[in-house]
Image (cartoon, rainbow, N blue to C red; front, top):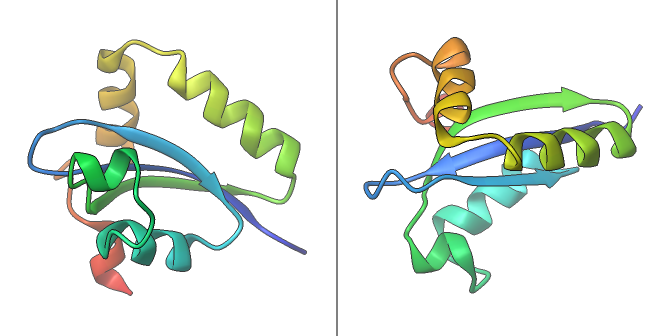
Length: 93
């Protein structure tokens, strides 16, 4: 079964980026090495602080949209629920 991931990246600026992908390791690598020009490279967002998986692409897209619609405080609470220290989850790979 294919997995789809909703994830949040941040950096020193504390700016948050919410994305969705079917290959989390590849996508985080692209963010960390600024392979694709865009929001995360502009703000140097290189730390994966939240991720969740689902087997349904439509659920992943709906969840991404849901989280993007939240106020920052609710996004922060979600991150801190899973990752209280805001460590880079990708460091474990």
